[in-house]
Length: 146
Image (cartoon, rainbow, N blue to C red):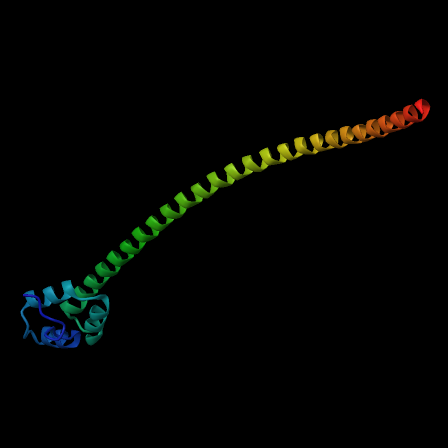
């Protein structure tokens, strides 16, 4: 039977009863095993570090274990996030390489387009000159035959 939060004893109450030996050792161990780090600290703070209490030392061990478990969970999350960040970075690198390739291709095509534009301009001028010359020839031919 799991006690609800209102039925659950407070850390100071458990510490006091443990100190008086009015709470069975199994119940104290069960409490310490289920206690949060804050509750363990409150339990530990009930005892003076100079008292030779078995519960003070056992609660410190439970707290150390709980903190180590929390640190391990945090480390696991950090590893997961680092792996995710590494995957995203790899994806960004691949996209950057693609973009670099496409940019180089676009630059080469721009150079080709510039050359073709210069050739088109040259042939347009030549066609214009040819048209002007043709007009002069037609005008002179018209004048001569008149």
